Amino acid sequence: MERSNAGWGSGFVGVLVFSGSLPATRLAVADLPPLFLTSARAVIAALLGAALLFALRQPRPARGDLGPLVIVALGVVAGFPLLTALALRLVTAAHSTVFIGLLPLSTAIFGVLRGGERPRPAFWLFSILGAATVAGFALTHGGGGSLSGDLLMIAAIVLCGLGYAEGAKLSRRLGGWQVISWALILSLPMMAAICLLTAPPVWSGIGASAWWGLAYVSVFSMLIGFLFWYRGLALGGTAGVGQLQLLQPFFGLALAAAILHEPVSSGMIASSLLVVLCVAGARRFASGR
Image (cartoon, rainbow, N blue to C red):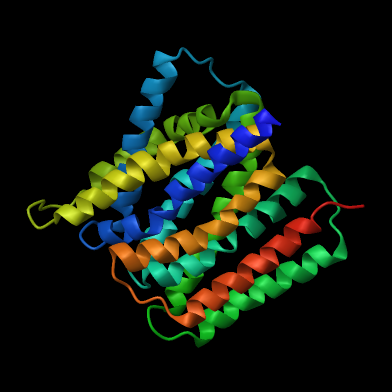
């Protein structure tokens, strides 16, 4: 029981940290190119992760772990940060947060595909209803959205769900924070090269808010959040602790309103609530009888 409670507590902290990612990214891309932001946050987090691994003398992953670590890197180190950074140049942070409600479902689907489970038919009913809710919101909601931005957010959710599912499997063997640290190190050479190539030619016009946004997504979103999140999945179980992601849209909407002063419409709130209910239902029937 103590192990399960510790997992839920750790996972909850991870969700709180991740909830600030989209508002912080929105601040950063106002003055920083998306490719530079994506690569810079990965480089900073990789250096911190490498320092942790070296200081705590962690063993290297086995050869068979390299493939899954590459998938984690593609999903949560490169794919999700880059696609959301591109999307947030087209949509508001509040608008994009609604799509985060699909992240638990994306994680569950990849968990089913990778784990070979046979969910009940009701699982797919809730899945389709949740996807239809998001698609309907994207098509009918006016302010703060665009078709290109919505498609980028959907692609980001798919890649992030894949990275979460792979990371959850690996964390049982390697440890939670070790997974994201090794994934960051694997991506470091490529990310460092991209960072140098896409660096802004002039630094004087970059505002303080953009630097604060970069600092947050580098230290908290890219590393510290995963320390708590993968630890929570390892201690409390992916199926249970993973449902804490359902709270993330509400935290994200509140932060977008408080920090960025973006409007949060009743349609956004209603869509987030319906998506959360659909994902909760899908998770309820994810396992076969």
